[in-house]
Image (cartoon, rainbow, N blue to C red; front, top):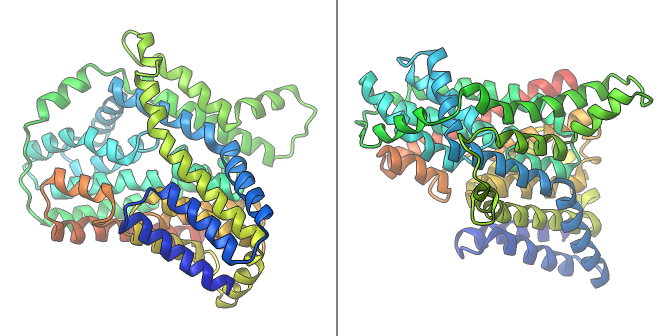
Length: 442
C-alpha cells in the first residue's frame, strides 16, 4: 500500500501543479502530510519529519541558492553575461552562429536562470542570425539547449545544488562529473540544432539588435565578468580534490582551503567579486529594492520548493517505504537509469526542471542504500543523472518552452518538433554519459 500511496502522491503533485496551478511548495507540503497520514505514521513523527526535512534541507543549501542567485543578478544587470558572450563569439567566430549560441547559453546559465539567460541573449542571437543570413531556428534551439544543459546539470545552478543537498552528495564531485556530462550533451544538442533544427526557416527580426550591442559596449570585460563564476567553482573543486588525496588534517593550509572551499564561503567570495563588475558601485544595488533584493525575492520560491521537497523526502524516509520500494525497484535492475526515468517522468508531466530535480531527489534519497548508491562518486552521479532527466521533455507546461518558441517566432507544433525533441536528445545523451562514468568510476 505504501508504494500505491507514493504513486498517488506523485500523480497528485503533478495534477496540483499543472491542472490546478497550485504553487509547487504548497503541493509538496500538503501531499507530504497526507502521505504520512495514509501511510499510518504517528502524528508526532509527521511533525518531526516536517521540521527536520525543511530545516535540515535548507540548512545545507539555502544560503548557497541565495548567493548563487545574487551572482546571477549582478552578471545580468551589469552586462557581464553579454561580455562573456562576445568573448566566446570572438574565439569561435561569428559565422559559426549555432555553435557559438549553444556555448554562450551553456556558460551564461551557470549563474543566470535559463529563462532570463534566453531573454538576455536573444537580441544578440537575432542580430548574428541576420548577419549570417541563416534561419534563427538553429541558433535559437542551440541557445535553449545550452542554457538547459548547465541549468539542469551544473552547480551553482539552484536545481542541482538542491538535489545534491537532499542526497548528501559532495558538491565538488557533482561539479566534476556535471561539467563533462553536460558538455557531451551540449555537443550532441548543437549537432541536433545545426543538422536538424536549422533546416526550418524562420526569418530573424532584428529590432532589438542595437539595444543588445549597446549593452555589450557598456558591460565589464569578459575576464572580469567570469571571475565571480570561476573562483567559487575552482575553490569548491579544489577542496574536493585535496580531501580525496588524504593529505591529513593537521595542516593549516588544508584547513584554510577547506574553509574557503565550503560552497557557502566560496559563493560568498563570488558575491564580493561581483561588486567589482559595475562601472560605479551604487549601494542602492545592495538594498532590498535593488539588485540584491530582487534576487532574494527570486530565490524565495526555489527555497520554499526545495524545503518542501526535503519534507517529502523525510516523510518517505520515516514512513519505512525506503526499504520496500528500494527492494522492489532493485529487482528491476534499472541501476543508475532509475533516477533518470523518474526525473524525466516528473519533468514531462509538470514542466519545471527544478521541481523535477527536487522531487526526484526527495523520492530517491531514502532508497539510496538499498539501491546500492553508497559511495560519494555514486551519489554525485545520481545527482547528475537526475539533472539529465529533468531536461526531458520541455513542452507546453514549461515556461521555458514558451520563452524559446515565442521569442524565436515558432508556433507550438514547430516548438514541439524542434525544442521538445531537442531537450529529449539532450537529456538522454546526458544519461548515457553518466552510465559510462558509472561503469568506469563506480
